[in-house]
Image 1 (cartoon, rainbow over the protein chains, first blue to last red):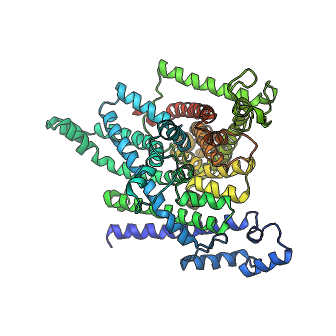
Image 2: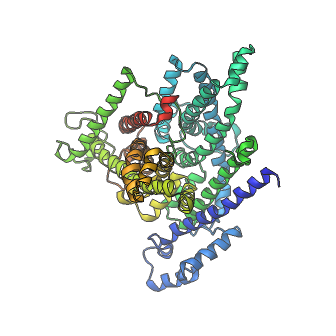
Image 3: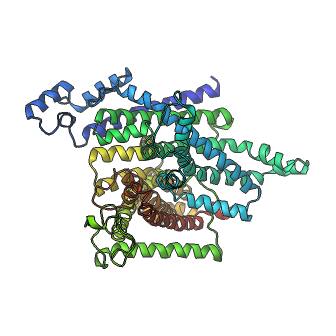
Length: 319
Length: 289
């Protein structure tokens, strides 16, 4: 068995219990907490008989572990239930909105990398200098600016004062690509602004450490160009760090997506979630939380795998 | 968006260094903290109008002697709402990390000291909790539990447990191998005594530094939830909900969103600065760099 396959098997073996626990926790949150689903569906005018009948129809009067197994069985068959408000299935609703959230996260990540990586390189090259001190301070300050603050600032500046960009709304890419991108500028900028300080801070300290390594001294002694040393010799090993930060930031990015989609009225997963909370659409809520959590776990898994592909030490278990 | 997994991975050189100029920044942060705390604690004694009394004739009034910071969209005094909002942010921001540092700190120390199965179980269950993006977990649970300050604090507290556990476990792991612990074991000290008398005083300092960073993160998460209208229930004012309400009138009265935003930013920045300075002092790696 090659080390890669062994590593994959170990990680998969670990993934399974986590996914089961995630599904159990999602189910329990929705089932044990106050607020009976039958009452929510029937509304205030429900008679006790009606509620009892609906509870029986939906299987709510059965023991909880039995309901969990039944629910899990449906989930494994790809049936996450359907909204009792719109009649749409959870999978339909999620599939419809996933591209929007994905586009947003992609643009945000690109912006964050485009700002964070060059700044980290410049700061690391002249660490301790005035520019480095200024940018480190700025990045530190940005950690105290949540997405909803920068969103308000950007809306005020670009939509209210300058009228350059729309504050809210969405148009599908297939209908009007330019219009679609215009709607995405402010939301992705908001998320990107929240993300770059983390990337810049970690990459910068990583590169400062790398620049003190012996092989950099050797490269300098060989008379290599400083730019080549910086980009090839120092930045390349830091690609691992970049992947790690991206992985760690996915959860934050997902949380930020909820906020940003709500502020800018983008019809993504986050807005679906907040909308479901508003209408107390428990089936959608439960399904969306499960999808997000599983997606998050799987993305972390992919990041782990990527890490192992790049760094042989990890798949051999020496890390 | 801020989350609870911030900071421990970021071993970046902090802008806080020992030296006179940044020392001033640190003391400014302390000063701002004292001001916010004092105002929040003394809020009922201060000569402020009620934060919930509406005055429909005085909607979005400008700054005046009666309303120092004007009034909001429902004619409520902005300064009073800001001051009472500070109470919410501080209560949630302090109580939630207390839950996290107590449970997470204890679990982390036990896991780092006893190792073995208990450690595997503790780390594994934290992995499950970490499998939910924090903000989304908080949203879902408060949606089901119902919106109240108590529920919000508990949810955010539970969410902060894994981070505190990691810090406590990491610190305990290195400390448990040190000579003074081995000496205590050789002297026949009980596990409880070693944990409480030998290890706890040493783990407490990094935990405290991390606690302050945790407060900053929790204030931001509470702000985000309240901003969405899913945090503290109205008519209670919180900085987040004030910013959320101010968003509706960005075109006519942007200050309604910007004043609470600035106050929140300064407060979170102060916690971050103080926490980061403490961490720089307590973390030997930082000194070596």
